[in-house]
Image (tube, rainbow, N blue to C red):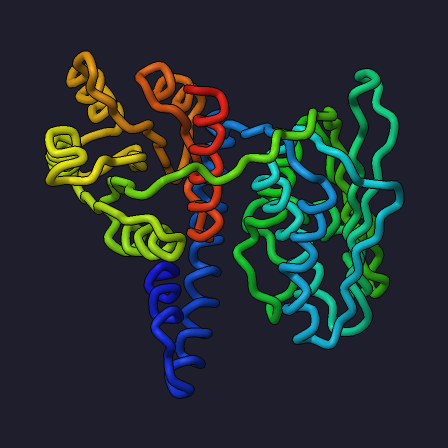
Length: 357
């Protein structure tokens, strides 16, 4: 539904359709958030949620979470501020996606339960016992809302616990936030009194990282996209074509194999060569590993095959390593922001070229 809304927004909807698209967009985001929370709770319970630690800008990560919540706060007439207790510059090994998920949960919860005043996100880096390259990140989300009674404070992180019948919610956001912070190796606590707002504070150790080399988008003229979700496939096509990249779209492994054979057989003559294969981990007739095996077996002296990036909505422990061992050049988590995802894909191709892999 989210993808369909994005496609419709790109088709210049009229003034009559725009309000309906806004409602559909909010509804789809809320439903997606609930489903993701349920899935993440299950993965955490089963020990299958793997954190993706990579060099990230901490400043950007925190600022984006605040900016994403700001329109919701402004709609209620609330001020939302982002305060740095210490400098937050530099690069740090983070799972930015999961950290922002926690921050969004806490910020949205604060805005929902605040009718007047402000919500404040503050953050700082403190010394860590783990060594010179480590710091303890401490983030606090404070509001001037209704606050919590002692009984509610005891239950606030329980699954399906909601505060107040007139303030509906799934009761999953805070429970999931607690579990994710624990997965980071950290703690989260709440300080609150009835009528005096609430402050949620989380802290965990993070390690300094070397700045990633600036990657220029790789030269990609033609990409094979293997994706059986028609809407996500169309969004990928649109995002690639907006960057001047031609797309061959295959919904099955059979179609992908045929496209690869045609590209290799007629490269430079009847069919332009493929510069990249972007393959979903699972499609209707098989798994990405099968396409990787086909490509390995098809290699002959003098035959150039394009690099393969596998994509997936979720990655269990060991999945990335297995696909890389089978011949994938990279394994990426899908993103709902398809334009940003395509930019990541092209940046990875640029790194392939730099390293010669």
